[in-house]
Image 1 (cartoon, rainbow, N blue to C red):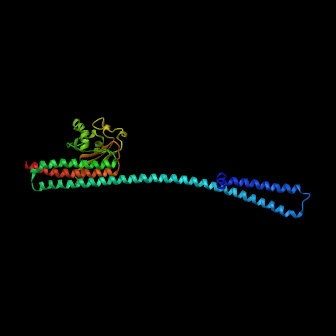
Image 2 (spheres, helix red, strand yellow):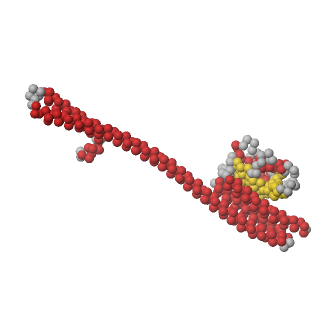
Image 3 (spheres, rainbow, N blue to C red):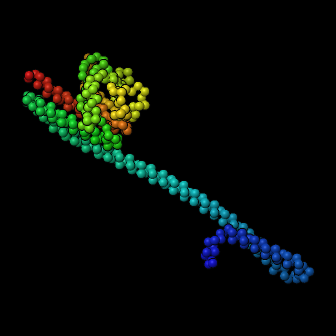
Length: 330
């Protein structure tokens, strides 16, 4: 066996123990020799034996010191290994956190990109449509009214599809977008009837049977509309991640949870001046988004939906002036 292999098999602390035992044995041999040769002992040999014993004692002390150092080194090595393991574990946690953070950043970047694209597309098409309506109003050319209404319908398809695209990206789930309008002017908002005015193309296919079955219904039959129009809670919008958690949640159809679990709704409001001269808002409808997985409860969703409800009202208000012109010219 080579010396390298031997050192691999025998640890340093074991060698120290063997050396200590051999040193003790050597010291005992010297001591016994002195005792046995006591009668023949020559005084001149005393320094030699004393030196041997002293050297052995020193060696023994050094060996024990070495053993303590080896033990401390082993403890330090174990501590280092434990620290490395903990460090690796902490690094793994940091790497996981960094990966989660990167995923969140990528998700938000994709969401922002979708929002900016939707904003650009909708505002561009709205500009073209409003310009056509305003030209018709200014020139008293009401003959284009019916073709303009067709263009408005095409715009709403484009509007809801782009809005859906953003919410799909932002929530990571298929969302439904729909506009609901109040249909009468009764004193109590909750006693007003409403009906679905427009749906995005995808949810229209899936839910048109609901609108046909219950085309007109009381606003208070849908819990979000009831909460928004209630004067007691002062809510200006409604957001819920899982409507099953709300004990009193209800919809016009009992099997609503087959279509959605999360919902966000904001009112479409018309500015009105009160008798005191103060400008307030009169709710004329609702813009609503729902899905099955949630992700609709943050401020991005809320502010986005409020902005798009104002965009819709702006178009509706412009179209209203054209309709008034048509009625007067009839």
